[in-house]
Image (cartoon, rainbow, N blue to C red; front, side, top):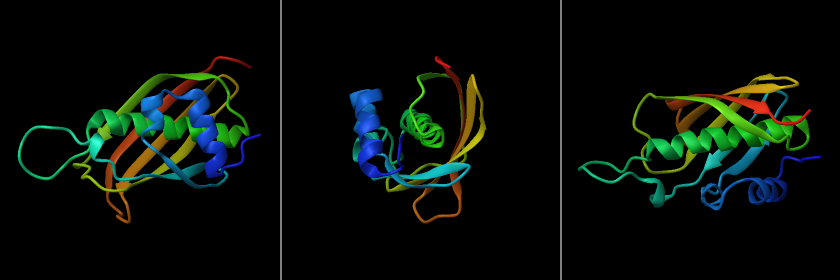
Length: 143
C-alpha cells in the first residue's frame, strides 16, 4: 500500500523511475479522492539555453514532470504501483514557465482496469495562472 508521504513517494521514485527523473525532486504535497498536488522545486538545470530574457524551464522538463506526477498520483489512488506505460502525452504550453518553484495538480480523469487518464495543471508557485496543462494516458501492463 502506498501512503502519500515523502518517504514512500521517494522510495517509489527510486524503484521505478530513471535517475534523471529522480533528480527532478518532485515533492508530494497531498492527495484527495480524485488526484494529488505536488511541487517542483526551482532547478536551474531545467532551464533552456539560448536567447536573452528571463530563464524559462524547458518543455521537455514540463512534460516529464506531468508524466511522472501522474504516475505517482494513480499509484497513490490505487494504493500501489501498477506497472504501466505512457501511451499518449499531450502538453499545452500557455505561457513561459519561468525559473522558480512550480505547483502541480493532477486529476485522475479515468482510472480503470486497463487504462488511466490524467490531467496535469502546472502553475508558478502561488499563482492562479496556468503555465501549462497536459493530458496523460497510461495502459496498465498487468491486471
